[in-house]
Image (tube, rainbow, N blue to C red; front, side, top):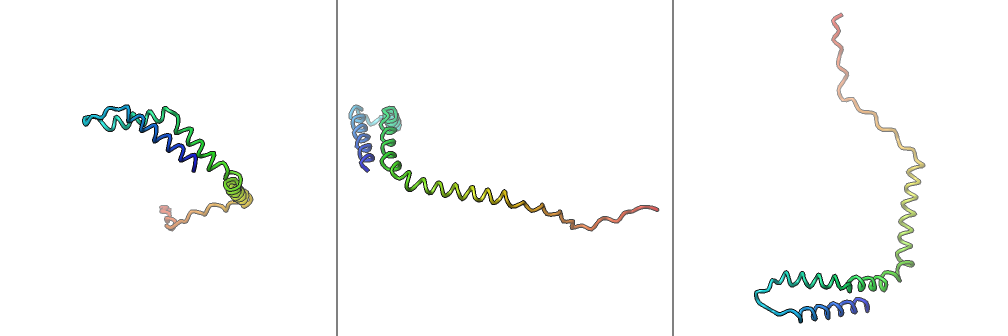
Length: 109
């Protein structure tokens, strides 16, 4: 949570500073202003660094004792199912059913 709060505070400050530099005009295109702000935030690199910190705080501690056992169990179950399929021979495909009786031959002899 501290990494998220830190990132949020940085973004809030960045946005405030960026908007303070803008001269408000009722005729301004708000979408252009918004897109410019978004590009500035992305180019600053703060989001990427902040998200990396959040992942290292939240995900990394749980990686070995929560995620890894679940992943290993899923892999073992998958491999066991694969091995079982390989050891059991596949049944032969069913014979096609003839719904129509064979047509009588019409020999002239």
